[in-house]
Each structure stands twice: as structure tokens, then as C-alpha cells.
Image 1 (spheres, rainbow, N blue to C red):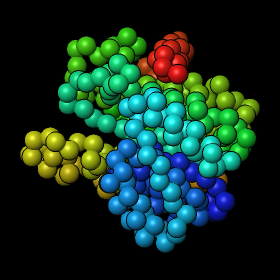
Image 2 (image 1 turned 45 degrees about the vertical axis):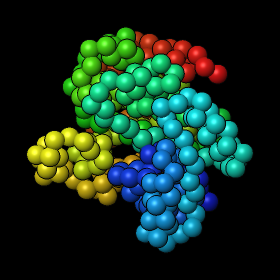
Image 3 (image 1 turned 180 degrees about the horizontal axis):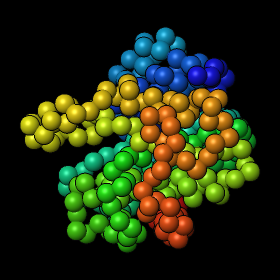
Length: 280
């Protein structure tokens, strides 16, 4: 692992699970870590824990609700006021929602948070990352992306809602977005990769029936192990200059057939631009 001293890293959803462990790992390597979290109370507690476990005070907290485009824009502005560089962006925050709901922007919540959150945060911080090159974008996806087919309209509206279906769709969007982003960033010194963290025992599945929660715990790995690939992609000299890949267990892997569909990636990008510019 490389020395990250002097580097600035943003980790979204850093108050629990993989995000928290990623923040700890990057802080331990010497980076200044900016946690981006929605719930101030839970985040303050996590901030103290991350500082304690990493043995450093170079950890900051910024509050942002990724379900709100206004909140994301506010966060990006605040970040740029405080920092003149961004070396690593880890888009990690995600939800698994049992019931269909809409965000304040009128978009189905799973798609809005899990995909458009990544898209808009990246878009708003990209200039800073280009100026800080070589820099890295790390998108936390999931093997769940393999269990869905392509239908951009369904992603956005998800009228026939299934919790897993919406989640799988959003994770396929993460992979398509990463590949398209990597193509667009060629030659800029900014790389973009995505990953499957492993089946992690995280807060994502809270609220499920007890026996299911117990079963999930039985077959899952710890968030600490789940964060290893995120930390690797954010910091390792081995992946310097590597872009547009999907990783699992710190190795490049082939993602689903659907994720290599260039036309779908282009269409998703267009839809994402439309949906994030509606409310400037």
C-alpha cells in the first residue's frame, strides 16, 4: 500500500460499514479523509471512532443527503471552499429500500441515491480532480448488478417495485457509469474503477425479518474485509493509471454482459444529465 500523506480523499457514506472501514484505512495510510454523511448524530460518533482507530486527527466531516440534489450541490461548494485538491473520491453510500419512495426531486429513491448520487458528486468535483491529477474515482458497485437486465426507463421510474430489483438496477448503473466515465476521462490523469466489496454484513439490510438478518450475517464477511478492495483501488501503486475496470478481491474481473453495452451506457449518461440538471 502506498503512503497517502498529503492526499485528500472523500468517502461518501463513511459513518458505517464499508465506508467507515475505508475511511479508517485511508486515514491510517496518512491521507486527509473527508467523511460525507447524512445523519449528523451518527456521523459525529463515527468521526470520533475513525480518529481513534486510525490514530490521526486528519479526518473531517461534511453533512450531505445524497437523496437531495440541492444538498449535494451545497456539499460540493463547501468542499471546494475548504480544499484546493481532491486526490481520491470513493462513491460508497448506498441504500437497499424495501418500499418504493420518491426523493424531493421526484425520482425513485434507490436509483437517485445509489446512482445519481455517484453521478452528481463526481460531476461537481471533477474539475478539482483533474487539477489534482493523478487522481482516482472508486465506485462501490455489487455483484447484484449481474441479476438485472437493461431498461433505463425502469431504472428511473421503477413503477413495478421490487427492493432487490431496484438495488440490482442501481448497481448495474454504477458499473455502466464507471465504464463510460473512464472513456470520457481518457488522457486527463483521472482514473475510474468500480468494485464488488464481497457479501458484507452491513447496515444495508437492517429492517429485514430476524431469521433473514441472521442468515445474512452467517454468509457474509466483515465490513473491514469488505473495504479492502476500496482501499486498494484508492491507494495502491499497482493500479496507478488503470481505469475502466471492475474489481473483486483486489483483482480485475469481468462484469456482466449487460454492463459492456456502450449504447446503454451512453443513454444512462444522458438520462443522468437530464435528471441532475432539472433543479439547478
